[in-house]
Amino acid sequence: MLTLFISLIFSVSYGQVVSGSFIFEGDTRTYSVYFPSGYQQGQSMPLLLALHGYTQTGQTMMTFSGFNQIADTAGFVVVYPDGVGNAWNVGFSGGSTANDVGFLMALTDSLHNSYNIDYSRVYATGFSNGGFMSYRLACEVPEKIAAIAPVAGTMTNGSASSCAPGLSVPVMHIHGTSDFVVSYNGGFGNLSAEQVVDMWNGFNDCPAQPTIENLPDIVAEGSTVQRYTWAPCNDDSKVVLLKIINGGHTWPGSVGVTGIGITNRDINAGSEIWNFVKHYSRPLLTSTYTAAGNYTLVYPNPLQGNVLRIESGENWEIAELVDPLGRKVFSRLISDTDTWIQIPQLSPGVFFLILKNEKKRETIKLIFCQ
Image 1 (spheres, rainbow, N blue to C red):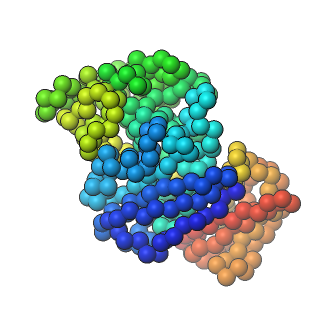
Image 2: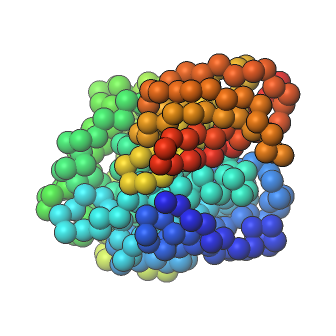
């Protein structure tokens, strides 16, 4: 059950931070969202999910990542969610058990419905535990995440063994070779940085050999950067590893101190991440998450034509279409969890698809185009 408690939706002060919360599967989930200066109400912009590390908060991530300043010039929205108990459920034994994939997708839906976020350009990045969570999103909802860029976080052995995205997901991975919290060489139940990069090279069908570039050592802080690039891969994707020689468990170019060990100052992780992910987009989908493990995908949305696909973990029985005034314009019986339906040709505008069975009812906004 998703219950929203969001204020200030129609009175955002752009260039500033708006906080929000909603109840998702019994937990009050909180987040902070930054709208760049120059943003206009209703303007469609890309969304970057910026996920904090273990014991941290979204506010911490906002402070050290510098994404707000980058967003002001590049033109994207950043959301900084908070994990339950300051942690993300990434598959560690004894770790968080929250449905964080469902929460983050519900958050994306909420921001889209309230602020017209561009569904085709949703990206994920994260530090440490948040980096692990970025990989989990790429594994489980690759149709919703256009690209990821984890920093100092890999994948648990369990998550890696069950990951089967079925779609190419562009990946930039940033990791220090002297990271003693999430070791570059792996261990303690998670893959090494190079193992996880190799894994996504395989998923994306990338070339076997990368191009390697030694970046300039601009600041003498004791670390340097090597860039490994595997391209071209399937669907024009690529995989990039920024290997921070002697780098610690830190965010390169961070504002202040982010972790343990040397913080590289030759690159700015936030700028590298945005300059990577901004090139990618996904076909438009609408997803609405309901109870744990259940979901509904309706696409294409926006719709051109009159054929709509519904995929769901719920056995819906009736599909209805109503206009913004609540007038029913279409109704039919459905029975499968994966079905195509043909609907009448309608004038361009917003309509609402209502899916029902004996126990539940779900409403999804649809946009009809010429």
